[in-house]
Length: 361
Ligand SMILES: NC(=O)c1ccc[n+]([C@@H]2O[C@H](COP(=O)([O-])OP(=O)(O)OC[C@H]3O[C@@H](n4cnc5c(N)ncnc54)[C@H](O)[C@@H]3O)[C@@H](O)[C@H]2O)c1
Image (cartoon, rainbow, N blue to C red; front, side, top):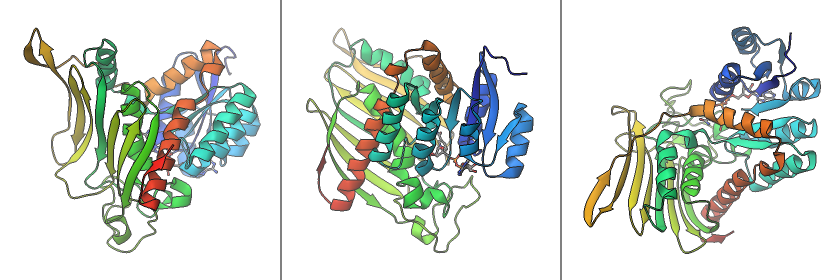
């Protein structure tokens, strides 16, 4: 029987992302995972059995209409995030959406508007922000050790990692974009978070699709690795962007699903007036690695610091933070507005790439 003191949680979407949310709700105290929705009947039955979930739905509308959940995670193709979020918020349900928030700034805006209109929490899961390197570096920055950070570089570069080659991931109307929308957005979010959320004032960007259209560059882990034949590929597999920030700072961002590089690399590098810092992690072709380094001076002596890094919090931490926001009762402080800004920056990046010149925000 449902314990009414516990928050009742639902998850929409049964893929890798949805399963991270299921596990996190299942493990969370004060929460009961009560409902799942997704179109793969067998997987729905299997996951419902694994988590002891009674309420199972083939479509999101039925879960939302059911009225038996207080909070819901959305892990569907990106273009469904906005309609599901708005539907759930209108039904009085607090929402945690997977990244990217939506396929466009306008769609993201409709989500924030619905959160405000219904006085509910809207949160977006940027799980890579839960990395110990990010938590540790943020604390270091907040002490002032780096001084004024005036330049930053961030990137997520995969050698061969187009997710679902030829599936919704590579269709513009469902995904909204390619590598930058899918994984670059994590690094954009991380960099802006570390820089203390300066306003992005303009974007100059370019996009390329050299692998996907030829059926090359498919994720080695997924069901569609290299297929070596033409596939529906309407998005980019590499994007680069130069962002101007309020106050004169700049951020150089790059992201690839596939390109000829030795191994997968993720990084944020910060250049400050009193010190510099770098977060790096990667793998695929090399031993997985992760590093956090800080360069500064101690009493005039050039120094390199290797701070102790806490554990990666993964999706579990994102879900727990969302639950804490709901439990805080201060819904007005959590309307997804920070994520909306990420969506608007992505709009500007794609608009600049299409136009071939700078776009102001
Ligand atoms: N944060 C991360 O680390 C991470 C990793 C992977 C994916 N994601 C994000 O999560 C989302 C899902 O990605 P995925 O790889 O799990 O996708 P997926 O294609 O594996 O799964 C999508 C799920 O959505 C369900 N779905 C589609 N239409 C539906 C409907 N009308 N009603 C109910 N369910 C419906 C499908 O049945 C499927 O179970 C995407 O937005 C993606 O960007 C995030």
